Length: 193
Image (cartoon, rainbow, N blue to C red):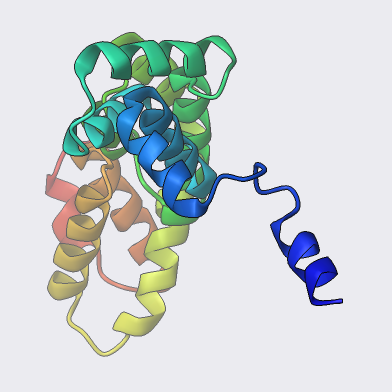
């Protein structure tokens, strides 16, 4: 009976090889190690080619092996910078409220090519960006009811700037939303759009 339990536990593990032997094989074969690293990272979330390349460099995988493995992953569609950029822009704009400038900067930092970045960021139209900025300002305005208007303006414009919205859009949205909220936005009238 004990033999059957042992047989069931070891079935499907690759026959007679022990975990130590498979670990040794992985250490000897840098391509297998590179594939394992890429699979593990891609299981968590999508990655750009550059992110995976940097991870392989940190693990001291030889460059020629890394390029071969990454090429195979790209060929079968596991690495797709264009799809990554589209998904990243949609997610970060919707859930984090980031503007076009911040989105472009994040994608460039992740190693996405400039033309792919431009195409992905262009998917966020001006109206959607404007509306998202208004939502962010409205959300913050409720918590700022006891503050002076100058302080509100400074904080709201600063928040939008940190999230990658243009200066002109930030001032315009804050002016309009503060006026609608009942605040005094006359100080912003001298600032051009």
